Amino acid sequence: MLMISPGLKRKSALCFSLLILNAVNVFPADSSLVPLETSLHNLISRLSRSIVTIEAAQSNSQSLPSSRSDNRIVNLVASGVVYDSAGYILVAASSVIERENILVIADGRRVPARLVGVDYQTGLALIQAERPLGLPVEALDNYRCIGQLVVAVGNSFGLHASPSLGFCAGARTDGSLQFSAAISSGSIGGGIFDLTGKLIGAITGGISNGTQTGAGLAVPASEIPAIVEYLRIYGDRQAGYLGVNISEIEVTPAIEIRSSNILTSGIQPPARLINQSIIVTDVIANSPAAFGRTAPGDLIISINGNEVSSAVDFLYQIRKARPGSIMQLGLIRQNQLLYTDIEIGRRANLSSDIQLTGLFEKGLSQPTDASIQEEFRALKKAMQRLEQRISDNK
Image (tube, rainbow, N blue to C red; front, side, top):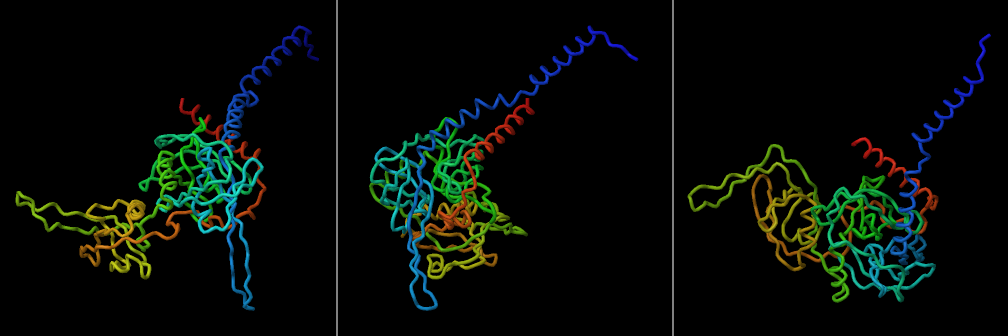
């Protein structure tokens, strides 16, 4: 039988204790994330005072088979950003336009508000509550946020000021910001913020694949003061309207376009090859495009002589055009180059080619099975992944 001396037992016990202590030091109980979680909690608690709930009522009259009128009041819920201490609040225009009653819910109060104006160019609207609510935001004066960590705050599935974490992808060709933080229909009208609590942009929609939102879109905070000032003074800001549905396509084989102009040197400019373009898929009846003899199948290659880079860029230029102004489109039809002058119409609604599917349809009937604790756990996991990526790159 093997005998172990008491001295060896003490040494073994000491070694085992040291191993346990080293294991604790190597694998701390998540202590490094406690300050981060506390900072995020404080940040979101502060930002939640700048985000309000917008509840708007809309009559929905339907004709029944019995010829009776079914008048229903549909309540829609969205978010808003407190702009100043005079009761002005930024919202998504789709949540308040043509609504009969607008209520701002904050600090446990329900305060009526009036619609000041709609910006049809960006999809924002300005409302004013009967009394000041919440804490005005502090906005950034630029939107160079590529790769920056952001927090999106808005109503999500019935919870006020529900946060989500993501990254800012930067500015798109239409001037809007694209970000990866998760949003729902109730988040529209909320804000995206940097980690100092400054507003980066006001959320106006998202890009969806039909089942979930792939990215969110926001109006840069640097543009908001000018928008608010215009809406305060003049009311609605109009946007241009053409009346076409378009899509981007690759042109194979490429179409060669030669200029009819001759340079002073007597040399003809080189031919332009069209290998990617925008195709008109549909023309709305009685629209400016229809009166301008634009037809499905036309390739749009220029606006007022300037090359069109993408469908997003094309829609942006149309929206920025003054209603009643004349715009010349360069088209390719059956491999022939032609130009047509079109009088730009006025955009009468906020339907968009890029938006969330089912935006504002569910309203207050959205499920409320989420929780603030779950949101923080999701943020915590995201930060753990970020810390791991930083550690791997060292």
